Image (tube, rainbow, N blue to C red; front, side):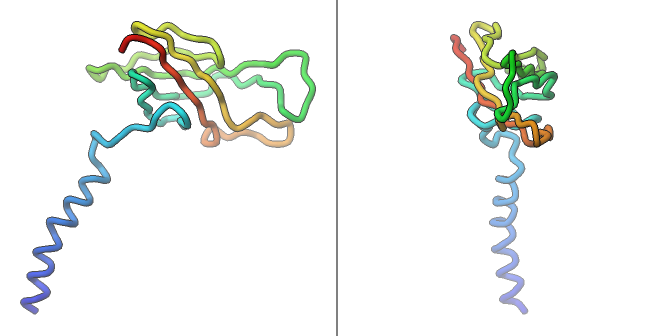
Length: 132
């Protein structure tokens, strides 16, 4: 019994240390290559978070369209002081952000006529070019 108590006492600090890793607020953020709605990402300087797909009028890959369509996403820029600044990004169109330009480079999955894209399925590739 005494051995089990010693093992438990020795194992407790290790378990606490490991559990702290899982919930540490300073844990690494995703880069801008595969970002989901609601996920914060470090994008070449700023930290941003896609919040909502406002429009996805892309031409489905299995259809013929007169217009290619567009994707607009409501985003949040999380500034260094914690302040959240909303902005809107349109696929392929640079947006002025701080001292640079933010671009929504791609949206996945491809749109199709026979499949409805759920908000949780969206993934975005993001880029920032500037002096951060």
